[in-house]
Image 1 (cartoon, rainbow, N blue to C red):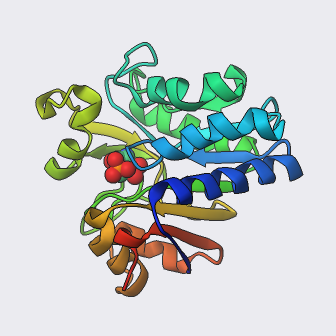
Image 2 (cartoon, protein in one colour):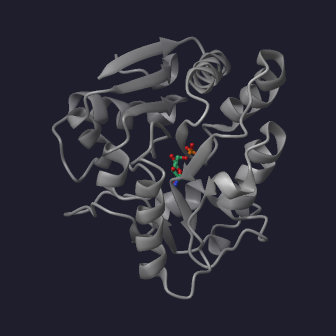
Length: 241
Ligand code: GLP
């Protein structure tokens, strides 16, 4: 794993935004995997700011987000889909037809997960996957467990993960759904290139376990050690010592 340290999250985010825009410049039909959460907010702000300045054209870029809450549709402001529209898609001009998203309101969640895998495959796979990491080492909603799912699946959220997502729900953890649909470990690991962002002291233990610990289902992010092209971009507080 390639570890890069930055003085703070803003500097890290600006650098990552510049790399993403350069990748789109080289490959206009880039297929991007994208995360939600608090960590990428400064990244999306930097992309909004740097896109016009760099003249980057997002009209052929395709995106696939990692996950979505079960029960929430695009019209719900608490959904990850609404978050992405607010933070990135509308501002940089990702075409609606090029947005891949799990539908949390799908009548048949299992079929929806299969559809998502098929859509990613039909797009030619994910070129660049951007990830955050949970304090317990989860990626997407692949939570620590005795066994992990390879493919996109329905996941039950751990209490700490629901608490970490409460900000999206007005700070009320009881409003955070108990389940989500999430890309699986293989869906993530099959991306050609992976960049994981980690900021803040709360992530230091997870980053350390991910980078230095054994590969274990108890730290799902540790499986990234098996990938040939992973970069961890961390601020000083989250950096492994
Ligand atoms: C959520 C998301 C993850 C994200 C994680 C960390 O559970 N499903 O994709 O990486 O939270 O969130 P944050 O960046 O807010 O710490």
